[in-house]
Length: 172
Image (cartoon, rainbow, N blue to C red; front, side, top):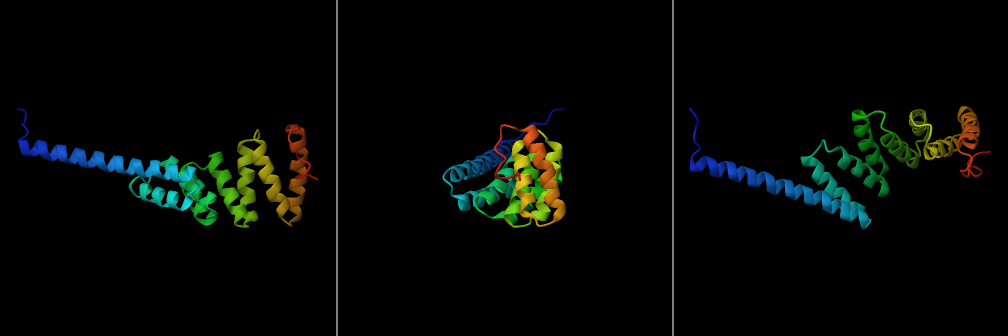
């Protein structure tokens, strides 16, 4: 036997649906407002809106990635690293997350932490001259002999694999 809904049950169901829709629209507008703020280079506002949005949508990977980038654009490299760590816990071999984290670490002056991450990114994507360029620049900042040697080796790779790139300012 089928159950029939009373008017009260229909109203509750409709109210719940409207509440859910309005909150979805509200949070979608937060994300839209965050993107607008980024386009206007208002990173503080964008960060606030993204954090608010992510409180309700903590598993929204593109929004997390946007937050990490926004922190970095706002020179908040520590929080950017934290978000990249979260993203890497989900997808440990994602080049963009590895590259973003390594860049943030380098800007924090933590080059010895950035180097192995850039090495991993380079290992995963040997056809990307930008990763190689960042790795070389970071290796060149180190005073360790092993890093100087690695930079020399990779400099030869850079010239051979990407001859149309301008390596003269990076490679000895």
